[in-house]
Image (cartoon, rainbow, N blue to C red; front, side, top):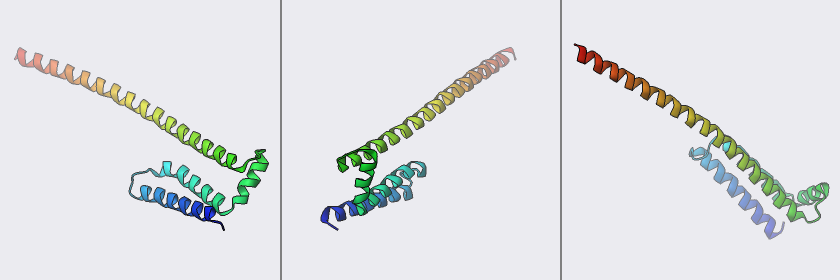
Length: 123
């Protein structure tokens, strides 16, 4: 193994351990960690078996193997962006629903307060 392969494996393993540590400390949700763990494992596999990148490049039709690695990274980033967009949409809908429920509760409280004031004045 040459030096770049060893460094790539070490960095990929450190990244995987970092992701697992963030999950353990509850800084990263298990749902989000799956994509990061998958990316780490792919990087480790490609670092240990660099010939796979060449085979994948030939299969896809890319003549420069590092360009395939960039393609993989871009696809990974797009998947992360899609995941965050989905989460943002869900949270936006939840926020809207909560705001509507709070407005209804505030309206009810105002009605009850008004009714309570009217009852007190009539007595």
